[in-house]
Amino acid sequence: MIEIPESKTVARQVRETLAGHTVTDVFNATHPHKFTWYSGDPLEYRKLLTGRRIVGAEGYGAFVDISLDDDVHLLLSDGVNLRLYASEAAIPAKYQLLVTLDDERFLVFTVAMYGGILAFRGDFENPYYRGAKTKYSPLDAEFDTGYFRSLLAGAKPNLSAKAFLATEQRIPGLGNGVLQDILFRAGIHPKRKLATLDEEDAERLFRTVKSLLTEMTRRNGRDTEKDLFGNCGGYAVQLSRNTCADPCPVCGGSIVKEAYLGGAVYYCPRCQPLK
Image (cartoon, rainbow, N blue to C red):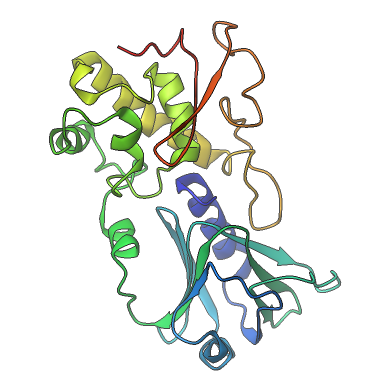
């Protein structure tokens, strides 16, 4: 799933690899998916996108915003997988959108669970997208101690650490995936209430959010996710479904997996005590 490290990585790869190339054709879904959302009628995407030159891309939270000339955008939300294929590659049998380019390479958009593939001109009126564009990211210098403390001050004291970090779009693009290692490194249990955090806890959590998301982005995302070329990211996730059967990398104890707030959480009871 796209979170901050992946949106930044894929956007950078699009800029470096595809800027200056022109869309030559657009093909609609071979495998309709009821949880794939489009902007308007996807049958109009060919008319909107064909002949447009890719001019850049930006990662905003859990969105990858590919910009084309004439103020046209192709926006991907969390849940969309984007792959660039060489001209000689076989075309996948199932996809939700396929875009060909002037050098005969092509982009394939697929959705596993849910996701938005949104083509539009100008602005897109969506509160999640707007929030992701306008709120500070942990990768920004403006996301400093003061800003983080203002987020804490605006949250209810009985909110859990997971709910604070990963709900209500307080920090767009910080989701349940990157959350696990952030809380593990900060030594904070996902169910721990904000009211129990002292000054040292809050500062440690802030610094971990900043440093770990920066590290994940610098390493081209997490190894549980894939980039534009289908390669896994270079950051080795410590707590995930792939590692929960392993001992804790710090104390050697058992990792616990629980369902909580609409998703699984992973934690070490010794390193992350519930206070």
